Length: 166
Image (cartoon, rainbow, N blue to C red):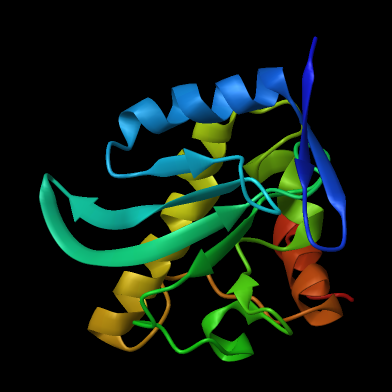
């Protein structure tokens, strides 16, 4: 198994060939996306379409970066500025990447060992679907909003165990 060493301004990132292949294979379903491993961080850029029954409701320009993938999640950035980049809209400071789900929820949303295609089809899809829903109706889909940080983690476990007890 080979690895590709990518030189950045302040760091070197190693991404294994098997993961590069997985990313490239996954992008075959997303024709407008491009993968580059010639930048300081491997990056995917493209337009994310929110569709329902073949109708496109919204399109977002996005960038996905990989730092420590697959042990660490890729970071997703909305670059078209159609969504306010703030915590209440589920973006994480200081770089304002998308908060796709509560960290303790990873085991069910994007378990370790999942393909990049699963990452796109589940957490990325759900994030932008929720953003479009909020834009159209002024509120989040039922059961889709949690607080930030520890508050969100507590809410996740309360829902998981069906309790209001902290």
